[in-house]
Length: 192
Image (tube, rainbow, N blue to C red; front, top):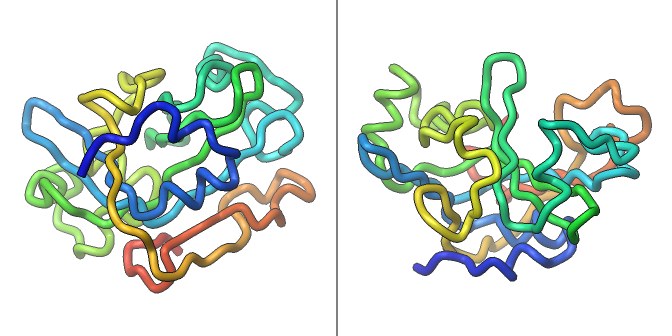
């Protein structure tokens, strides 16, 4: 499997959110590499999307990377968890795709060390769980996702994709009902 080229990320955000399903998210650390097939994503459509951090073109130190080129990592801390997004959309149009869950592929012993004594399906079935398991942190903010140590490789084509409402954005008006959450149908690592 090969690393996805930078231009892969230049497709429209809703298409990218679907296209990332089945791709392999990889993080190389001093302890070793860990990776997982992406099985759940959520699209955030920028200035017009009340649930997006960049709603109304809000430009802050945290959201700055979203205004740049597609294919970079947008990491941020929510509560106590680091979350990872793929920047999408053209330069100046701050959109992103949140990686919500992955199916463990490589470095599973390392994931258990980082996450503790969990059931296998609970290792990476949420956006904060997967970053901890893979070793993704705030230090990855702005990193181009086509070069190590954090990158995405092509993987497999899902047989069926489910689509529904995004999770955890109840205070975002009508945007809470947009069906911009995508997952590999029937995969046990998809979050709630």
